[in-house]
Length: 140
Image 1 (tube, rainbow, N blue to C red):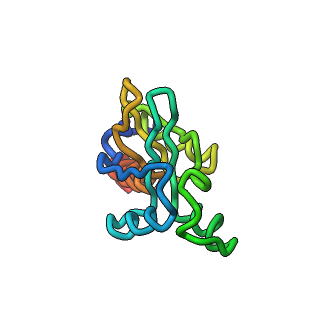
Image 2 (image 1 turned 180 degrees about the vertical axis):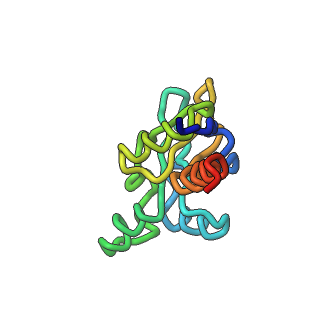
Image 3 (image 1 turned 45 degrees about the horizontal axis):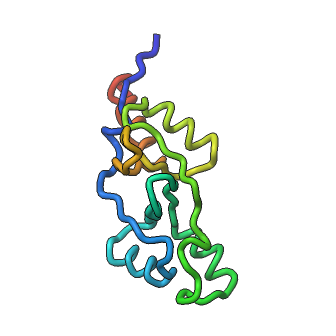
């Protein structure tokens, strides 16, 4: 019988999540991404009843660059994805991977029990960690 490792999302997620206000310009978002060395930003909620959004470089490329729009005239809320798929930090990595694959996503927000940001996890990081662990378990 094949032994599958149990790895929690919390073991792989990044707790260092960068955020931006939805009213910021795309130029401000790009500058923040460049300064922080990240390819995505979580868009803050307006209040406790709102949902988080996410802005990724591909959104900027598709919605601003490809359409020849001004970085200074387009605001984050106009091109972000919202709501964001979120997962629990205790979810088994295998199920988190399946969830992202099913929806064609590259990342998910990890929220705590109070719906506050706990971290972010990427499909890349989860697959690499899972594959490395499985290789170690199976002796490959």
